[in-house]
Image 1 (cartoon, rainbow, N blue to C red):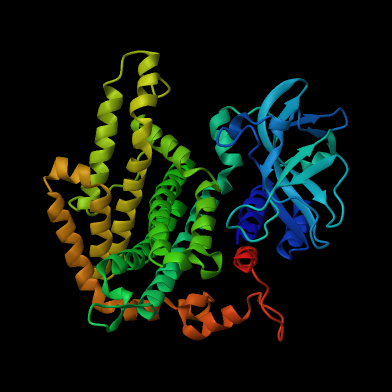
Image 2: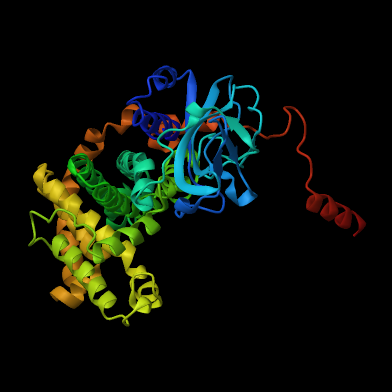
Length: 503
């Protein structure tokens, strides 16, 4: 999935933006569409992640109109995109580099660069395969450098002249990243549903012996029910939110607003998924520790997604900072009286008040010490709250069942318990009672939720049934004494035998 998102969105999507007046790009796009060439997108560097606007890779214009692509040091190496020769398939990449013309830095530009022919690397391109990332399935992440690689004039995508506003120009060059932020974040939705299904079915199948000697399923315990029901509620609400946020994203006129919507959605769904999947894996006991049962592997994959297309924390810092500076605003809630909308408004108002209380001058600005120490730690919770509110509004608009929405709302209230207690006077017992009522109302529909999820058609976790578990056990390597031979004494047994013989 990650390869497809990079290939179609970041690579082909970026190329398509420059098609106007560039008919020479059409054959390349056709090759990419047929997957004759695998397309990558190289933006971040070892030394430049979310400050990629200050990347060091250069593309220097030559007298004949060609370019020299160069990584001046190891910190300028492109980090993470797969680049090694694989299975005979050609690989190329959109490489974001700093355009240098007659010694003048004209800002970053995208360049099309072939990396390898599927068997050997291109001249002057050096890539080093990184070790396997935890949770990933064989993706060849790499570190790639360019040693004065010569590129034809047609490699440049865009114009040579210096942009009037470098910040906005940079955002336009990487505009497909915001699309990727939305697209990859949506993978959290099937992650929630699949993991809830695995934990739910296992909890119904796994039994425990009670004081009366009778066996009963562990799903009878509220501690088992709670994370399963919350995950199903989150899956339903965020599925509605994905459609709602895509509509906001595609209709927004400002690139900054599109980034804001994608960031808020990512922050909310990522935090929900990470918290829920850890709890769901824990509720499966030792079985939850193994990748073959799906939950912990999915949690690690989604953790990688929280960094892909922009680390969610740093994106949140940028979003909150720009909202407080008044650079743009998100659409207001159609449900301003809801608990979650009040929570969102309260956290942003709190951040604004703290920011305004800073000292005058540069030290009190958004890059000053006061803002750094007091406002930045508020960024992620505030942006998550924006995402929770967007998700709630979406659920209401799309008719998500009231019992699922009530569980979602109760979860958000408990997440922000201190704010709700301080500002709305909700006692801790009241918040827990709200959750208890919501869970009790949804519990009778657990079997229905499991069936409607559709996960049974494609999940292969061994813990889902006795038969699948037995097949899994039968597939494991077996270590035992050869047939017909006596078992070999252990070292301790041998020593004991010799001591006894001397007595």
